[in-house]
Image (cartoon, helix red, strand yellow):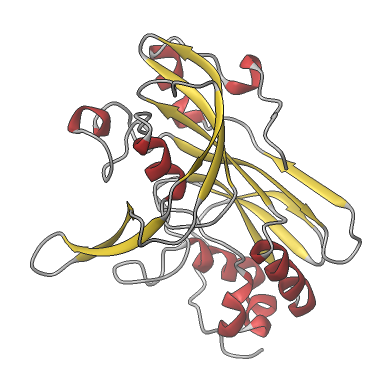
Length: 257
């Protein structure tokens, strides 16, 4: 067995929403980073994946990101696509870059957007911000000097206290859904980076869940539509705001896949 580049960790838990010999769609819990990094060398999603699929992911190598096709922010829960073979990775990478993969999120926001549906097209740039003497973080900023970014959205349900919104990230910029919704006055609750202080403390964690992925299978070419349920740790938040879970409130998406 070849030496593994990424340390396996079978204590990292995740769900599997789809699995075949060519790819996985896994469900990442909130508060779990996607890839190893400073202070998270052995407790990322990738460490957990290596505990179960290490030999296959090692064969893909670092140049293919050990199979990871995209990432989710640490505090965002939901679906992540992972390739298990080099041909599948290469075909899926082309699909992601060609915007052929549908990535859908549910978000609980402080208020509903003015329009019930729409597309936010505002360029986003990444910035590095120092948070203390020893640490820096990357944040997103809407600026004309940024890269083109587009997020489609629709309001599923609203109450006087908040709104349940579905968003599709058409492009894949850093913190895109979060910064775009914040830019139209619909900050995601629990977001500790964007929005006012009251919004940051309004949820037990970032109220953002990647609930659906649509793509053409890299080998069979069949259309895959993988979905997950509203996360358990945010159910009480919906109840407190007088909102139903999206499965009951009309979760069937009208955003183009």
